[in-house]
Image 1 (cartoon, one colour):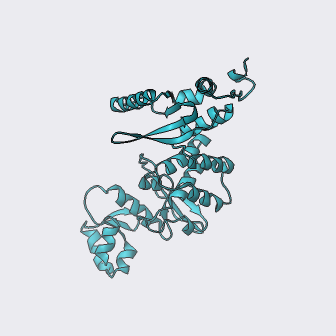
Image 2: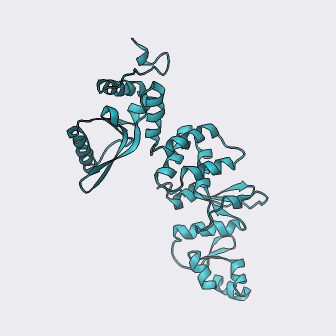
Image 3: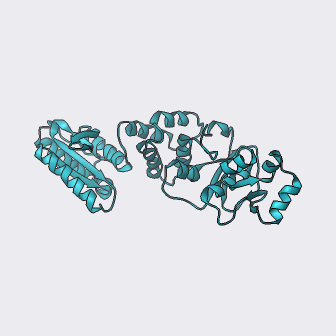
Length: 312
């Protein structure tokens, strides 16, 4: 029983857990005195030698925090694949009625009825993915940053939009509630990046352009291509990429995809973050020109009195 507990907790155990598993105080003290167990945080010990791995550090923080603690925010995001960045700080949620001493390197968030947020199966104890996402949106310093967490969760297939929407409804207080709720609808319709979301809102909708098909599937030899935005009636495809540079292999793949579209009689336009964010009106004009040339009967509308499309 004790060995299984230690294995499950990546070599970390608390003094109380040792007692609960049947070890005596003398046995515990002997292991500490002889160096077989090394202190990690308060009454929590490592039962191994050498630098503690990441999982051991997380378990030590949890055991030090005690009853009801779970990993949350950026730490939970790290474990769940929401972020590829590892922070030195460990984030925890503990029940709101508890108070624990300050622990270096650990940020404690108090929450009423935290059991609702706990993932039912993941180990170590952590918040559900949708709860992690919402926690991170509330820590964001901008709406764009908050929307980015929604896009990432859905785009990486970690949590579907309806689960995130359900978690939103359970929260009495939520900054940017209306904006987050509206974004979830667009993300569910196929916006798989913040750039695609901005294109939909500030290029298409703001200028009255037709709404394209998101993530349109195109068959090819040996697989499929996914076009970010496709206007099949007007033979136009739009590709959006927020990366500053493409590796040579990706550039060649993009070229093959563009060439295949050209052979099929379609135009491909490509835009990056700067185009879509800083010059959405200019992008809208180019899109409108191609659409109009290929049969779109309407005209784009200016998004504001200062929009270049307002010029006759």
